[in-house]
Structures are given as C-alpha cells and as structure tokens.
Image (cartoon, rainbow, N blue to C red; front, side, top):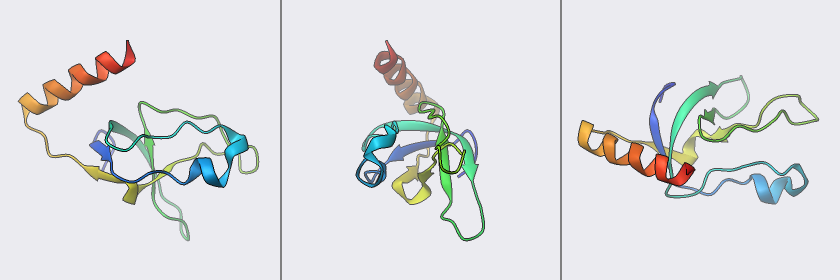
Length: 94
C-alpha cells in the first residue's frame, strides 16, 4: 500500500473498545477509503491515515491515531469500478 491507494476496511477497529473516552472516528467494515499517509515506527504495527477520516492528536502521545494496516485490503481498480466508487463516496458525503 502507498499514499493514494484505494482500500476497503475488512476488520473492525479496536479503538472504541480500547479508548471509548477519546471519541475516535473509525473506519467501517465494507467501506472504501483513500490512504493519505502511512505510520511506520520501529516496534509498532504499521498504520494508515485515511483521507475520509481525520482525528485530532491523542492527548497522551500528541499523534493522530492511525488504523492497523491489516484491517484493510488494497483494491485493484479499473477505470469503470473507480468511477462507481467515486460516485458512491460523493453520495455518502452529501
């Protein structure tokens, strides 16, 4: 995966159960997202930042939460399916 990749959420995030008081916006299983950044740090699991979900920094580490890369699968898209996904995203937003 890389910045700009189109991904589908395939596993639920553990954020709400782990830190319910933080009110972190999370991806939903079955929805499609665009990767806007990748979090990589030694000793930590690789995480994704998504265009469609932006959270503020966590108070105890001052970093925006990312989502585990294994909660997503990268989609291989042709131009027709990409157009359909973009229309779906627009409808979800408005």
